[in-house]
Image (cartoon, rainbow, N blue to C red; front, top):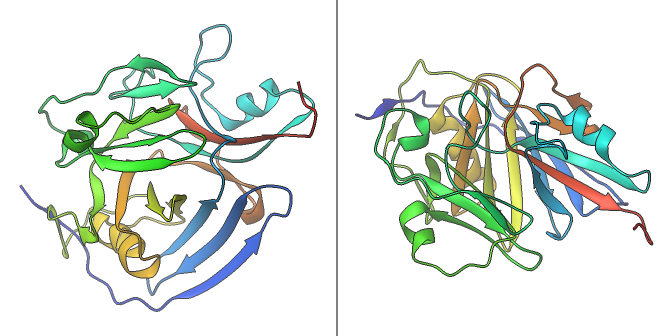
Length: 248
C-alpha cells in the first residue's frame, strides 16, 4: 500500500554556520511549508553510536551522554539513530565500537521500519555507506558503527516509490543522507510528510541515498541551532564527540 504524501512547491533559503572546533557544519533549510535543521559531518572518526551506559542501562537522553563524558571530551551534535523496541533495544542491525549487538532484520511486518526498501547506515573512520538492506547484506563492509532503519527515503537519486504526493501523515521526522563521503543528518522543526522530507534530501541537497531514522519521537542536540530536545526516552543515539588534544 502506498503512502499518500503532501505535495509542495519549494521556496528555499539557506543559512549556514560552521563550527571551528569540530568537523560539523550546521545549516537551516526553509521551504514554503517546512523548516529543517541540517548537520553535515565532514570527518567520521569522532562520530559514534551510543545505546547503553557502562551499567548496561539505556542512556535515554542526550544529557546522560554528556554527563558521562570525560572532562577532555565535548559533544557537538546528537540525534536519535533508528527504531527500537519497548525495552529500547534496536529493531534491526546495531553495531557499536565494532561490536555487533543485534543482527540484520529481514523480517516482513507492519510499520515504517519494514516499509520496503529499508536500509542501513554504517561507517568506520574512513568511509560511510547508506545502502538498502539487501545490498548491505551482500557487502563485506567493515563497520565500526551501524544502524538499520526504514524506509529508504532516496535510492540512487530517486524518491522511494512508496511515497506519493497527497497525505495527511504529518510528523516531526529525522533521517540521514550521504554525499561525497559526508553524512547529512536532517530533522524537521515542524510536522512534515515522507514525500516532502525525502524531496529535501534529493532536490535541495542533491543527495542520492538517504535513510529515514524515525518520526514523532525525533530529537536532536544541535548547539548552533539552540536545539536540545529532551522530551522522549530514546534508544540508539548518534553522537559526535570530539576529544581535546591529548585526551586519554
